[in-house]
Image 1 (spheres, rainbow, N blue to C red):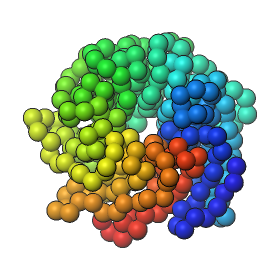
Image 2: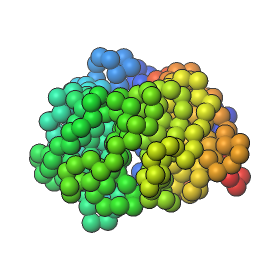
Image 3: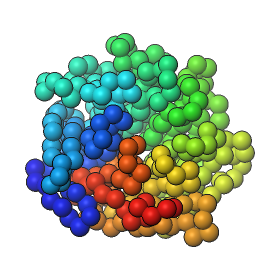
Length: 323
């Protein structure tokens, strides 16, 4: 594992590990988790990497190996040491960064790859939602060994499951069936079905400032914004990526700013309220860029990871000046 300052980006090289997801700790400034896989996730094992920023760059704090690829990671919202990952063997793993041993718990119910995990952000709930290629979403209480309920309705693989940061018990899912769906965990049923693209949807996210606004990113290279009060047509469309959009994240600091990463190797930053919405294109990877997150502590800091075996933390120019 080598680290270097490459231009403005701090880089950690992780040989033989292809990055799928990167998530900043909600507690510790500069701590990042990365879910990675061997052999591009097609075969072999997976590794959860815990990375810290230091003066000279990035340092690997701890790594945990799993016997199948790891495709997503989410931090606990009530314990700074705990994370959950989703794996190619259909299981979720609960890890403790304070312990060097294997997972504290393994939840095995999905019958195919778990591609998405997310820990609820609203107070009073400590729940994890998981999305799988078995076309189901499952709801988990990490203190309970089995799922609380299973949500069915998607007609293809589920790529993304994200809790609303505003509405307790509400989450969104995005699927290869070309729909974005909004669910109510208490009603165990779908509230809204949005035929958001005429292509597989690989990612979705909720706006942090508007409880009715979501964004989707799809294989058609477009990002689309959706207002849940009127879903007949998107409220914005952002074009510029040249291959499938793998992940999209709204800014925690700017109501109309978001970031997306793609199989075109780039990360792009957008302000959908501007006539010319593309703020910046970052081209510092040489392979599919799959993981992306914006820091909750620093308004300018971004992390990403790629199949080029690198994890990067950087401050794009567009975020260091007012958007």
